[in-house]
Length: 238
Image 1 (tube, rainbow, N blue to C red):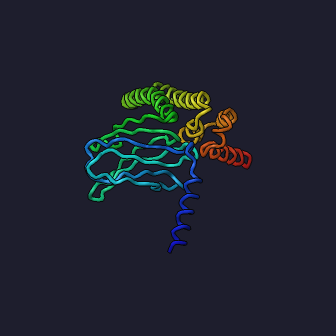
Image 2 (image 1 turned 90 degrees about the horizontal axis):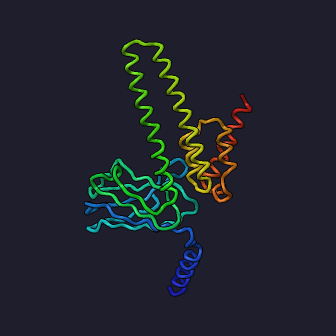
Image 3 (image 1 turned 135 degrees about the vertical axis):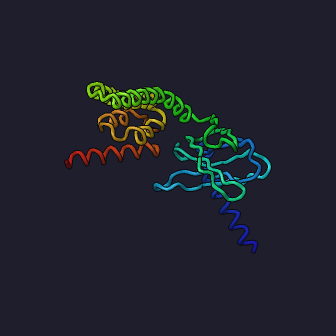
């Protein structure tokens, strides 16, 4: 029994020594109004959303997760209510080493939340604000297109469609430029993989080439490299 205890203690010490404090994320926050339930910390592995940790809430709406992040990537905060019901909405956030704080409420979980502490998340917020301008412009053009269809004005309809094509091209170029301006952050390859993956491969290649060595070696950096290689192979086979 004594030998078994010593062996287990040694194994525990080895596992602790293998952890890297520099890669540690401390995620904390508050879910206002939550009395009882379970918060799930999730990420995507092999195209599947999996839970990597959980925290039970029982009276105190504050929570804390400690997770080793080998490479910054998007994680999700998910909520299971006390009756076992899983909320349909999740809180996506860019996980990275350091302290990250997420505050939300039970009533608006997944819809209204504040995230602080993540540089990539801050950059993502800036990108969303930039994209909102294009979304507003596209909505205006959709309304104009609907009016043109009702009036059966073919020439105006063609002009509006050209404007929508131009607006889409501008949106793609804005995303590429945003990635170039954030080449030292993992959000750069992430945006190319999720927002403009079907853009001309030369633009993807331009951004990848500009990435810092650290970002190239990140999860999204290596995925982007593989994706570009696949795109080039497909192009050569045509």
